[in-house]
Image (cartoon, rainbow, N blue to C red; front, top):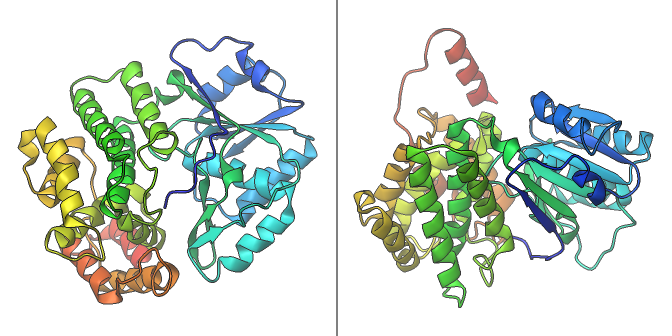
Length: 404
């Protein structure tokens, strides 16, 4: 899903050494740091600079739950924080965004918990102003989500993974620091580029023509070109460019005047990732080829084949080796970028994923309206090569995920 843009996030891009006192100029009142526990070097760098003496909360990079939000809220309350700086991937940034909103007004948390039982999407009522919340300075260490500027966040509950939408979820300040992407594995840089690419492509496929199509096609072309450059060289400059393109998918013009629910693949991948415990982009890589197959074969519920063909012609012009078929081409692009999907998926998991996807995003809801259980099961079972369960611990872990 895409959410209404708010224009309120101040974006700062740092391509060199961050001045020691610069972060301090962005802070209002007492500040604290919430950081991915794996990013010790980056944490220490901030504490030696503008956050010297600030309290620190370390979080593991795992899906955000109400329990996570309670921990962040307790940290904010205990230290009387007026500014919360977040450093990490999408889950850490989402935890700080959601906690700041729910901390300002517990009614928002109650609203989210109540409506999470009805739908995978929870939209905090627009026009509702929260009480004063802590300022958020969001510093991503990963590429792809654009969580530092987006007006949405993911939240896990007992009934599934939800998308919470509110204009108040956009960060007050987003800081892209080239140093924070240095330790990111190369495979995750490519996963992030794919996520940014499909955010734009998916909404185009699911939307009618727009005056902003040229902006979207230009952004897709830039993402693909950057991906090809990264295949041959890896540098701080190119990684920072990837982060900027990811952010631009939310802050630029490419998503304007689109169907906010146009990217149908996201909802299926979300359920698959939740039920299997796999990363979101692993699930996405699993389903995107079969879904684009369906679109090319004339299944309009998944998207418009003419729109898909149009955008893919731009990609194929950049790299003719990808071919003219979008479905075959996206598989080849995944292969070139080293992004892998699931190599095994049981029929039981396909059935559970389809049931969950339709129940939480389909039916009368606009996200997967017109798509039934059978259609989702078809693309899931088509997506993987059937392989026997491996013996030993790896097989036991996979079987446990399948049962879950």
